[in-house]
Length: 358
Image 1 (cartoon, rainbow, N blue to C red):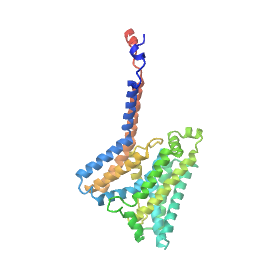
Image 2: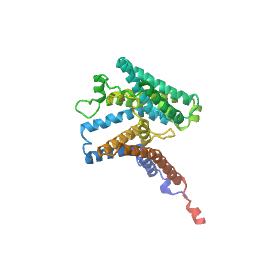
Image 3: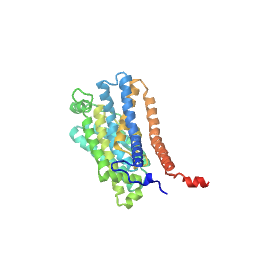
Image 4: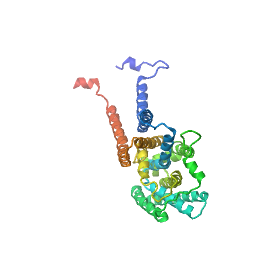
């Protein structure tokens, strides 16, 4: 017979213990998501650095940290969406260098900086369009395509500017790219970046475009059968990535007061490492923009701390590479452990009568 205690109606206002346990378990899983862990690690690193690392907390160093991280954080915005859709762009560093080289060449030719910047942005559109068309129209893998354009764009940058270094840009633009808001440590350039961040968060997490990107990354075939314009979505993400990379090239040249063909060499490694460290699934379909930005600033803060304690640039590159490997393996391992536990809990326990019969 059924247990009367289990079948009796529950008094109004009393929560079902099983529902409460399920809700608690769901909240626990949400709290232990990889992007949340990365955010906690960033806070812990900042607190420890303020307490233990000399000169970390002064305004000049904090401004230096944010200013050096902004180029990575800029490109991370469209790169996050691109990786969520199941693709990747390794040519972003070369696009930054090409944009800076063209900027320096046109400035030497006497063109106004107000004309040069839109032309550089248009160049980024073309670079992204080339990558996107090769991937979406010819069906080539984005990893192979963008490795090729990484070399091609860097070679074109060297042809455009050669070994020259252009440094005499207008002072008002140099001041904006390196200046701070009032007497604070916040760079002036962080304001337009924050506006772009707000736009990107809204697009990815609060619009049909963002939901479509997640759907495409989770299953391209299912998304196509659902009526989504898969190729168009991916092409738009490649164009957005190229555009922001070219804009970053302009910022890079002004921030460091130098336009060279080899600007931002290796930047793509830092961008990918930060994005993946923030919990974006390399296979697409999973992740949050907040996690990606937390990963970017965690990597930037770690590099800043290593510089303050005199860790060599080569060792910092090794640490970045190790974090890149960890950022790919750790979320997958966490998801595999979670699925294993879920399957274990889903196996029904043997009934008492069956045990007695055995």
